[in-house]
Image 1 (cartoon, helix red, strand yellow):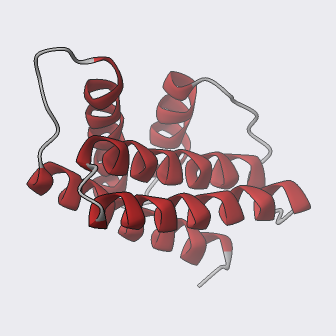
Image 2 (image 1 turned 45 degrees about the vertical axis):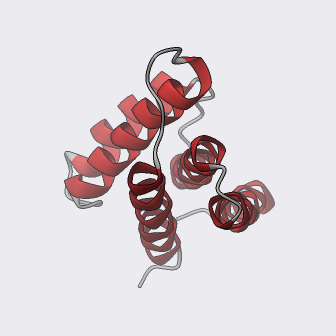
Length: 128
């Protein structure tokens, strides 16, 4: 893995987003907590891809490349790819949904999965 300053900066952003998600969740702002947890996962996924010199920016491309280069090859347990995809759907509902609401259990699950996802990406990047 190529742990460039950019990769490290993305992981720093991922950890910060998790901290913010926790604060939002504690304050009862469940939609924004879930959204921030997704962004933590997004930054971590970007870091993993960049460590392999895979340059993508769009959310859909990050999801696709994460699946293709990591989940399908066994470098990442596919459950983490599913977590990422689920968090993306939750974030889209939180940001754009009019009739659906992100409730506490959904936010709790998304934040916990975000924490597990970022930890797993960190483990892979550290070569452990």
